[in-house]
Each structure stands twice: as structure tokens, then as C-alpha cells.
Image 1 (cartoon, rainbow over the protein chains, first blue to last red):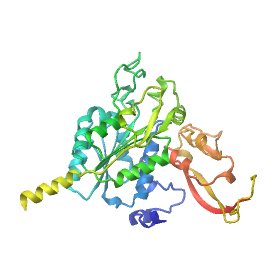
Image 2: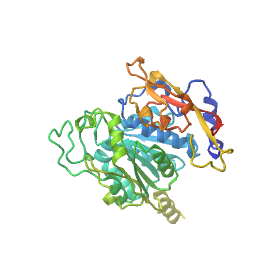
Image 3: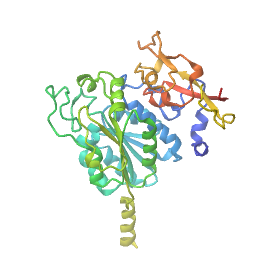
Length: 289
Length: 90
């Protein structure tokens, strides 16, 4: 019942048209249906994010969604909030600038693995090191989806993609380990099948002070699953159902993802640490007086 | 429903009920909702929408318990639930 009291008044006026999805109040309806393929998990990730926003009680006029380039980068164009579609890989620097210029804003970076981890990898680790107050939601589909399914830094060894036809032979990034080692205060990983836990996790991340990181493992049937014996989104969801293992508080070092092995999920890091803005105001108080 | 013993609070318990709304033109036929409905309420219909996909249809409306999983799993924002009046346990 408490969630009803905290609903933004702006939303209540728009609601109540018949045959209207309850999430349409936070979506740009004119742009739907979206461009994501049938069976893609980004829509599920966005559903969970919107559900979490509806429950979070934050002032939605002060929530900003920042996206980079890629399939997941389209999220900024679909949410009916202040949003920012930035250059490739630079979502986190734009978000840092937004937060520093206006500390009242709640900044959410919603982007894909190719954007946040590959080209924007350095920005991710430095934002986590500084503990900038923002929430980063990274949708990981193990390849570069929008450009044709090329091998990426998260592709598991042995996986076939359009640029690794004999199987990928590189070590992939373990994203929770990367974020935790860089200094993030909240690190979680979920698949798109575990929607309720994912929603709760995004809610926790939104309320966390500091750099919170949520990785969402998502199906990409068109470009990744098709080559790797999971031809439909449903087959990939079934794989998450069979191989998903929830281990809260596990050392993220052990949360590696193999090609067809277990997917370890859960909240790995949940700590308190002074944030970048705390240090900023301290330093300012000392130097200016 | 069969019980091996009658629960003491059975008179106070209520079963939630939901009504399913499907926005057929948004559906892309991924069938997540049909597969993961815990009460098997939905099935893939024979009809086509404008994009040529088979949207789901309601097979057994009485079985829906308003859990909201279809709404959360749908990547297309094409299915939602309305809460209906709860019914007593039979």
C-alpha cells in the first residue's frame, strides 16, 4: 500500500485510459513496438527497471536515464523520462557530468556490454573507483548485437559468433568481479528469467548511495543463440532456468560464465563507502572554508 | 482441490483473481508468457497479428491467480493484468 502513496502525481493524471498497459506511463508509446527481436531479453530488463521505478518512490522528474550505443542503448529513447542517448562507450562520463552538475538528480546508466565493458571499460572502472553516485545496469548478451553479432569481451570461450566461426578463444570479462575489484558498493547479477529478484535488485541499486552495478544476462537468439545451440529466446531462458544458481555474497571471482556451464547469480557486494560527492563537498569545505 | 487435512484457516483464505489483457498488435510471439505461466492460463492462438506473429490467447481464465509473471516476462509490454475480486477457497 505504501507504494501507492509514493506514486508521482504526474503519472496519475496520464493513467486510466482503457486498454493501456500500466507501464505505458513511463514509455514513449508512439515509439512502440520497439526494434528488439522476438525473444530478446532487453524488453524484460526494461520491464523490471520500469517496475522498480514505479515502486521506488523517487521523484521521477529527477531520474535521468543515460544510454550509450547498441541495442540496449535504445532504452533511453523508449523511456518517458529525461534521457540521454550518448556517444559509443561514453555513457558513464556523460552520467558523471550530469551528477556533478546537478547532484539532486538520480542518474541511471542503462546500456549493453559492448558499450559499457568494451569501448567504455575504462570509464566503468574509473567511475567505480571514484564511487560516483549512479546506478549502472548492464545488459549482457555476450556479443555485439546491433552490428551483426561479433565476438566481444564478454563472449565465453568456445562460443561461435560471426567473427569467431571456429569458436572464441579469448578469456572473457567477469563483470561482477571487475566492478567489485574497481570499488563498486553494490554488485549483482541476474538473468532475465529471474524477474522478481532482478526487480528487487534494481530497487536496491536505485536506493544505494554510491556506484551500484547490476549485470543482466539476456538472451540474444538472433545473433548469439542461433550459433550456440539455443535457437530461440525460449531455449536461452530454459538454459537460465536449468543452469542458474543463486549464491548471495559469493566472492565474485568465482562467478565466471562458461559457454554452457552454470550461471552464478545473486548479490555479491553490498557495502557502504564514502561517495565521490561526499569527498567533493569535504574538499570544498576545507579549501573554501 | 484435495486436502490431506482441512486447513484451520480455510474460511479466511482467499484466492486472488486476475483478468488478462493482451495487446495483440504489440506481440512478437516469443511465447515467454505461455511457457512460464505457473497456472497454464495462456496458449498460442491460431490467429495472426499485423506483423505475422501468433499472439497468445487465454485458455483458462478461471485459473489465473494474478501473479503478474506474464506481465513482467513480456518483453513487448503487450500483456497486463487487472486485479479482480478474490474468491474463497473451494
